[in-house]
Image (cartoon, rainbow, N blue to C red; front, side, top):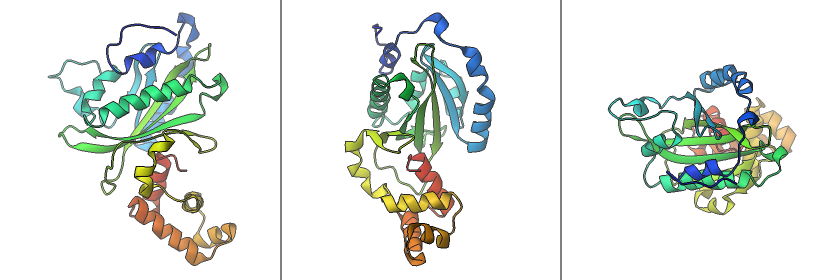
Length: 256
């Protein structure tokens, strides 16, 4: 593991691994740029790629860049630390801690498993008018280098609906394949009321696949009334106006 002076609280995530000049293949990344461009358009989300070898963003397509490009402020928009000044000061320590502990966790995993996990992080970030927005961020490993180091991290972030109130930084690392929460499990209790039950997640998952209430009832051996009650409870719990909003909310939180 490399060691070195820490310029800011994010610096030491870049010193967890040792990279070699010929261990990264940027042509491989260029082949993904079109996909990333389309992802940012289709999802209408911010899509960013953090390069842990160069210690900077190498891809930025953000709906929130306007406040960050203030010409009166000297800055490098590819510097990950620059954006931290727009995160609510009460949330910032936990955001830094989330990044650090997530990367600490990921590098302990076997190389073949490092792409199987996702950090989900909810915090407040300032817009160009100085208003704090309720942001949901997702981070996954996009590429490993030839030695198995975590080279590129894909970071997606989006706004949560205004009707969903911010109740403190909410974070978790989940296994993408199993849905199991693998990090920060002990912090879920304060946010329990926003978490759907296993049955509600099951119902919402089927709704997201286009199944009607009658079909869901048949699949789960429930009455239609019970299914409809679950659907109503889901909308109330996530404070969504419709099923589409609820599905999007659940996906952002890694529940689906």
